[in-house]
Length: 424
Image (cartoon, rainbow, N blue to C red; front, side, top):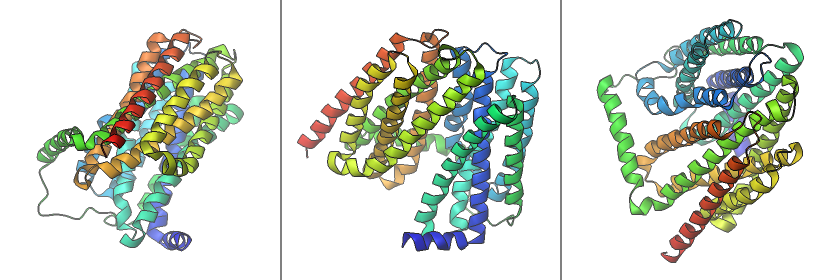
């Protein structure tokens, strides 16, 4: 059945076009984000600090948190095909400005402002792609489309990141050239969007559409209502899972900054060698994410979602301390795999808990809050790591602090899970 539905989906011309826009857009995102990270961390002419790394992470992630909840309000007022067209054209223009700034002697603040604009526009494009999907797929196959399209987009972003590493190391020894590759991919995405009819992706004109200011105020009130809904005693399981994944995301973010600094300064004196090490570590951690997607459904049948979150945090508390405290390459790469597995495993379980324990009428708002918490935790971790890390990234205090947080999450979730069982 699934294979047949997939064949039907791919036979739909407009679905293929929308999917192509997603693949090209997210591949370009992967290229751009790796170019930004390597420019900040691995440029030979730059003496990178953990503070600079934290700033780059804020640029990459904060627009998702600050703009995300309001993007839907505007997407319900603008023609989505035009959002995809003009959004990708604008990103190509802004990314080309980033490339110019990379080869110019300009203040770092100007460079970060340019990158921030690119990632802010990205939020509208991704939301537009999701909102447009029901316009090109019938209701019977929408679930399949919602599974295929975002997953393919994520893989495209990973492939774009890998392509950026290859271009940076083997073709052009400059991050500006990698950014120009992202520009070309954004332009290709815009051209594919142009092949669709202007009104194909909606939205339809509605007589009851609110004024923009009222809609924005309504979004703020809706998020506040989501927080109150989550605070109800009946939602304690969802609230606990969200708190746990936010803390685990914090830990993962802090260790990511530490890994960047280790690759750049502790393990290599050559920036290109350090970049290759980082690419390897990212690939290993990505393998952990993949394994988590495979094993989590099987494990949660036996432990339950809260039990699996507890196990993930406990494993991370022990192995992160043992593997990362020596600051050696091989055990740190093993830790990257383990942390990728447990972080994604906990996230999948949290998604399941939220979907099951939150009423349908509040689910969208809770996931918007989830998105904010997830990204703000990562950025906050980068800021904390910037204060704790020395120049070469070797910080026993940070490793121990993260292990303590993981352990606290495991202990709290274990008690919480036992308490929920005893009350059932």
